[in-house]
Length: 193
Image 1 (cartoon, one colour):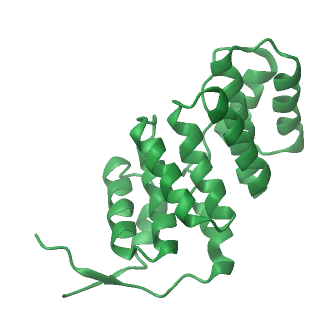
Image 2 (spheres, one colour):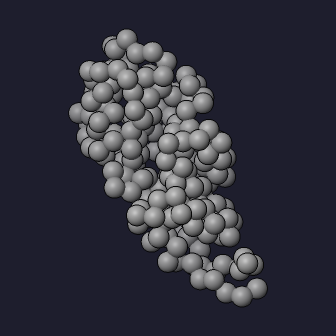
Image 3 (cartoon, one colour):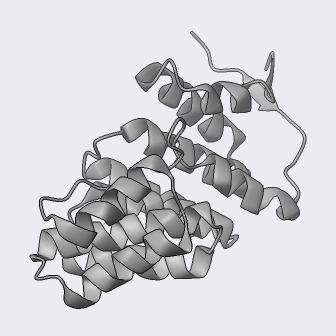
């Protein structure tokens, strides 16, 4: 099977933030990173898992980070969860800072890199987002379809339309019930070489 050239209308820079919002997982839109601690860290995780990005939920994450005796894994997970909530709020800079803090503590958690890619897309830094998604995929995240979706979005923004198409297709293959990559694929037109 030969891969055909793809054509689509270019994405205006103003749409990057909207596309970054789409880069968040379907259903819950941004899943939290599972932690083993209880208390406020657990409440932070549940809010991230359910997409309840309220100031109260972010405050619970912040209080947990400041006061709970978390091991490095759960501390990194709590940063990821707070960053996920900030992605929902489109607070890209703060989300990126949280993912960077998580990665500094536990660089081998793929979800930190995958979500970092979404924040970088929101900050109009798609080349860095591709690299972050690549790193996340190399670390076997629990939901790789999200990494493929983020990388597809970033690749498209860099002009790599064929790479974006392949990544959206991979996201559909991995999560056939997830509508977001299917919606994105409708924008592409395949034409003969």
